[in-house]
Image (spheres, rainbow, N blue to C red):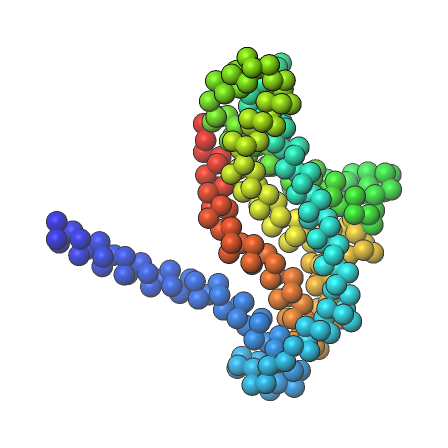
Length: 277
């Protein structure tokens, strides 16, 4: 037993070496961006990889105010919050219906929803743009919110259906016996029980909506979102790398903070699909 314990500890130490190197490879780009965002243009040209000798926040001020990142930031906040709320409500209702109710072609409808996950976004861009133009939703927050909802809804429905399928059906039957209607069962029984999955789903959709570039670039051609604005910032300040990296840090900071706080829920959400459906 003692020998087995020593071998196990040795294996853990050996495994920690490549894992530590992998962690450093992930953390170094963050350090590189933050460090260079604190340099002046002259300091960056003289030493790109060295530490900032005289840290300054002027790059953040210039990127935020002169490059309209404040407007882009608000556009991202509005569209992300709106899309996440809509996705959470619709996917919870759809998941409840597919998991708990019995109606014709229920399984076929679920398979159709899952099949949309295999369709590349590039395949539907032309009909998508025609639809958006026809509905006059281009350059509107509502248009981008509805677009995010449409693109990210299949996975959200799958996740909530898988979670609700694992809940005891006796809870629903008991609520019906007490006189609760379907919406009351959903609101008073399924939503409270599904709160862990709903929170995880909200975090995942927040990451997807905030980091999106393609859909936002097509939909919000004038009122840019933050990630699209950062992409344009590279061309505007191609010779001002510290300002560009400051913009990257501004865009990444909310998501990094969100991920650090809720990383356990994000990881646990991956296992939701393993719930028996």
